[in-house]
Length: 113
Image 1 (tube, rainbow, N blue to C red):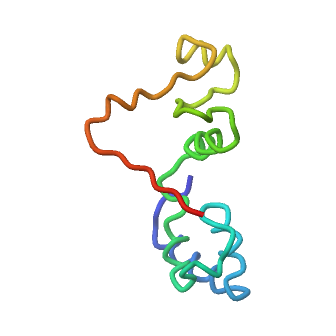
Image 2 (image 1 turned 90 degrees about the horizontal axis):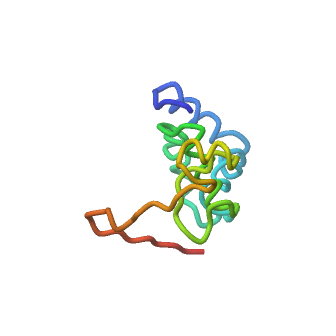
Image 3 (image 1 turned 45 degrees about the vertical axis):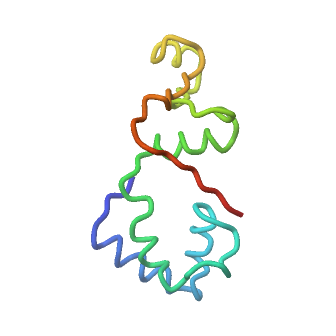
């Protein structure tokens, strides 16, 4: 969506300095946590200079599908939005699961609150 560049880095530094970091607190709450008191806010400019660099619209949509419920309980491929579109893409009305057994490296998922 937004490629990495020095302009974005500089803009992030300026934006994160406004209103004592309130704007970056709001943006970061959408990606990380809701409690800015536990964040290292002095580094917000660095964090924001790389967000959402390197990701496309469908990456964010797929991430959202995992959160909102259209592909919860398993790790599924991107939901095309309709049974017809999924059937054309995957040969079935719902997106298939990723076969995580095909991964040939250790995988761990960490979570916290």
